[in-house]
Structures are given as C-alpha cells and as structure tokens.
Length: 350
Ligand SMILES: [Zn+2]
Image (cartoon, rainbow, N blue to C red; front, top):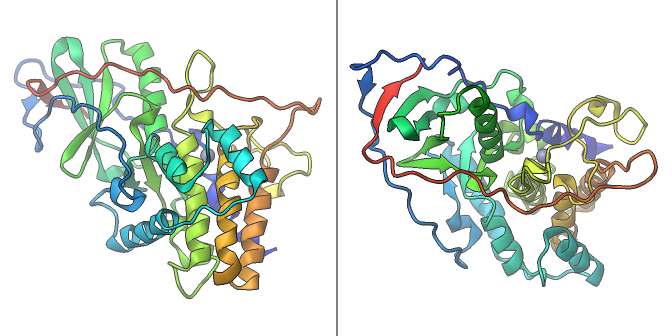
C-alpha cells in the first residue's frame, strides 16, 4: 500500500527522538575574563504579541537556515489552509471541537489554535543554531552551538516540536544545575526564550520535502502534498500542550505495541499514542475535513493515499488492554518567568 511510504515521516516525530544533545554538562568557563560578546545583543523579554487574524503563511517566522525552496513550499501549504472554505461534516466539526477544546471549528478558530502553539520554523540540522543558557541569579548567559542530534535519521525526519524538547531538556538539566533559568535560541535576528513548550518552535526535516515521500511526485506544491504536510504541522502543534501536574507535557508518544495494529517497522518505535487526544488524533482530525478539498483537485490515486494516511494516523492510537483510553490534560504549562537579560554578560560554553 502506497501510503506506507510516508510512515517514516511520523516515526521520528517523537519528542524523545528530538532530545538535544546538550554538550554543556560542564559549564566550562574561566572566571573573570571568560566573558565574550554575543554577536547579537541580548534583549529584554518582549511582551507577548496578541494573536491576530494575519494569515498563517505570514504569521510564522521561517529560519534563515532553511532553504528558500522549503520556505516557499511551507508558505504554499499554509496558503491552502488560509484559503480553505472550512467545509466539513457535522461529525468532523464535532471531533475537532472536542479534541482541540474550541467552541466552533472553522478555519479561523483552527488557525488561532495553531498560532497559539507554533511560531518559528527551524531547520533539521540543530548544529546551525546558537543556544544560550540563561543564569538569572548570576546575570550571565552561557553560549554554545547546538550539537546535531545523533539519534535521528535525517533522511527520514519529517518534523519535531523543538520548543517542547528544549523545555523538557531544561527541566532535566535544572536537576543537576538549579541555577539554570532557561534556554534561549537564536533564530534570525532574535533571541527566542524557551519559557514553556508553547515557545512554538518546529523543526522541519528533509522527508517533508523529498520526492521520495511525496504523494504527487511531479509537483511538490501539489494539493495532496500540502495536505500531507499540514497534517504534520497540526500534529506537531499538539506537542506544545500539556503540563507537569497532569504529566502531560508535550503529549509524548508511546512505543508502538507488537499486537498487529501497526506495521512491523513501527513496533517498539515511539510513534503511537495511548490517549484519545494526542498528536496523531489531532493530525487526523484536521486532515479529515481538508480531504474534501481533494475531491476536485486530486487524482483518485492521491485521494486513496491520503485516506490511507488518515487511517494510518488513527491506527496509531492504541487503547489499553481493557479497551479504555486516556484523555490527557492539554492545559499549557505555566513555564519559566522571563528575565530582562539585556545587561547580562555572555561566556562561551564548550
Ligand atoms: Zn509526534
């Protein structure tokens, strides 16, 4: 079945596969003169910008490290969503409303839901980014270049929620280094503070764009290909949700069971959910009504493959042995308090 060709897109969407290799175990700084000047000055925390009705394609910030082809393609994908008339069945609307906690599922409310959770699109190669560790009490920021993650296969990487991954990594790091306040990431001409999983950082990988994983092989911006990527974008947006009190930060995946419900290649891979409202459910619920767009604009084969992807995502949602399924609390984590770091000293970590 052709739809299976896209499976590797999702096999690397797990948070754990994206955990950063922070090579900053030893804050190696020489006291006194070990300071440096950041090539981009640190700034005060900008006040939260109110969400607006600006089109999704213009709302997102695309990292300069992304190829212009990737950016053009993502913009055209988001334009499909921006121009969507929102036609959906009552059942599709009800599913979206219940899953996403919105009153009336329309392109506008779905767009707002997405904007609350995603803001920056960054490249797959994390080695391209500079990271800062903010030590508030010491008024210092330790700088380092992110190491490339070694536990992902770049060729198969579709996407990942970097905001949740960095936030969880920070919490972990704070256990051994309580003076660490939070991390900042340089994206274009901005130091982006990762104060919570809602920082809205999505990493996009080659599989989203490589011909091998496309549904339509002659036009990367074909509607069918855009719908496949939109499913991934909304899936990743769910990973910005959850809180520690409910043990739901990032809506992490579970390892797929060996019970015949998923293809053998996924068994033992964190590419399944044991929750009703996880990322696979969200991606599927958004894709389902968008498939109506395909009726007039996709070939029969493209429609078959997209329906296969929809069914595949549903098959990743695995009930417990007794047939029940958890619903996770999506209430966002409060996160760290932002600090005015504009006068902080920088030093290099290695
Ligand atoms: Zn995921």
